[in-house]
Length: 439
Image 1 (cartoon, helix red, strand yellow):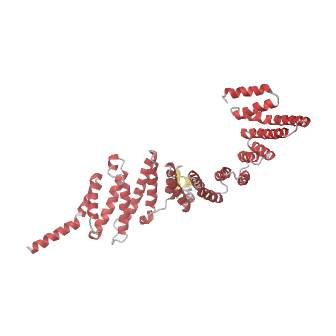
Image 2 (cartoon, rainbow, N blue to C red; image 1 turned 135 degrees about the vertical axis):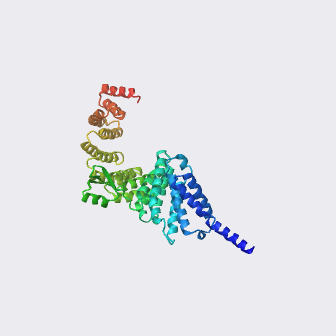
Image 3 (tube, one colour; image 1 turned 120 degrees about the vertical axis):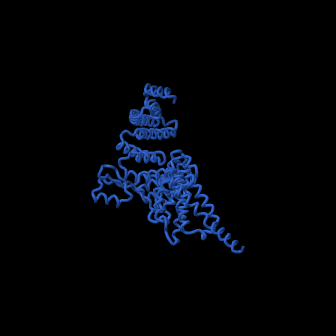
């Protein structure tokens, strides 16, 4: 009786220690037949059994098979084009990724590395699954899920357990930053962009034309140059450094979140790194204007004019500051005329030239108002001078009107100036245009 009891206990112990093996084997057989429902069922049962045990009680070979095939099963579920199959596990790719990493971690200390090489290769499919799902979510307008997909791919790919397939793909991080911004999560967007800069991300693309005349993308400059030297490709094209756009995103995000310290930090850093970048120059100019730092704005404008002599807008803005803030009408007129020299069809600059003369006429009005009742002669002299000034403005307003007849500000100015110089019919004509426009 005692011998029988020992035999029963031994059999029970064997069954308790070995029952995960047939489940794993059944899962593998089902997987080979592409029967994913059955495969998932068996591997999930094996998971329950193994989780209820001390891992040391499971044979190394079985553990390796379990982790590897669980990763394969869930990866195939995640990649399935069939909605019902994908519905078997909403988090299928996450489970696959974790199982694969568990395998690699396990085999890193195991006696034999049965699946390490195959698992590292399979990591490419898992990373791809993340991006496919992220792309689907993005197309559906689910930006939060799309962001999470890109971040999951980024974090998964850089795991050192993946060996030669491990990679710090900052391009994924860059896209995650863009998508987080689309989702309205400016904090996560900024964090991703800031990390891109910390990692030295440039986003430069390398492409050429292969021997069949088709465009070909290269992972780096060295790979492209190798094909060019070997006669396998022609017409190399190196894309632009995208870091200025990363800075601009960080600057814009900080402004939207009203984080002015971050705004100033990123703007200053960006301008130092890319002093020739026009977009950053413009952002800094607007920053000066927003806080009414006209000295800073003028320095910025002088720099912009020197770097962009073909752009009239900088002369225009400089003239506007000189006219409205510094009350330097002569200097403003010089800048407006400089704007028209490089961009003759800039109606706003032409209009502002006219307004300079209006401001001069208003200065004369102030002088007239200060005269005493017995200073009639001086009053009349000033009035005649004022009429001449209005007359000088007229040519600019008429030219501006020819450029942009739909601009009611120009029409309104013409109505007033025609009246001031005594051309009442033209003044009435302008009024009729304003009335018709409902102004």
